Length: 415
Image (cartoon, rainbow, N blue to C red; front, side, top):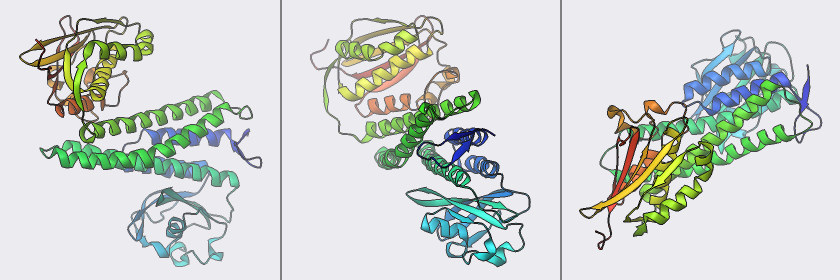
């Protein structure tokens, strides 16, 4: 079996097969949205990575260890709870240390009576931690065996990725629940989202940056020879970690739209749109898009929020326009004290029954398959405009496609 050198370690190597299996698990975890999916991935990956006879997924539940699920040659403790102080998984979580035990009957931290009915003779218990430990991954063998340094490192890498996935899943689950229960109490809801955004920024982005950094180290290290499958898996890890970072940034933007300081001013849309089109020049060139901008009015708005809204709408028009030659038309007018700017595309449009739901968090239209996006941009845009006494609607474009129109107050002197 071929081996590859781990950056920063001269005394150990990761087999190509093990690295490939780890990268597959990390990639699957990066797109998991709930705890059951994470448990399913980890219980199988932990056993396969180190060729164990069994693996358990343990979560900390107040002062107990909850053995959520397992993958083993014989039953272990699925569904049972034990006091933190009474089991080795609790010891690992409380001390935030990986535990390697070649013979469980020679270690007094092991509750021997609980293990006697099982096949277990040796084990490794690895804490899942993001801040303090929230769980542990147990791996077990039927014979006396001491896990190698490589195996310990593989299990810790899996546990670190699991910690990120758990934090992300729980945050997204709570966000989605709150969005589903939308009420008129926008102020209270905004405070909750701001708190989640703070958690996302500090507790999620840092480990994501670490994952991307390690992936880049592996990819760029000339001492590591990856086969085609491993290289593709590594690239997928980097893409998914970047996507998760973008998702976090989107949640932060959504929160800021409701809670950030609002400074209204007269905004010249001609200048603003020219800047946005310049900022999107790379995307426009890659998509071979044609952008036509007409004469635009002034609006009373927060320039920074309005700029992000317009940038989102133009980027969407470029991405969702005709696949061969996207065309984007931007126009505006002033009527009865209200200024408007419309962004139209020549894509498939938005079905009538989806013209409200696409503005909900994490919701994308049926025609968006294959196009980039997180389902946050339009929710952010409508929230940002609503806060400024504005509105955002979608309709059919004049020549087909979709037309998104922003309405905001016009300056008093506008005609």
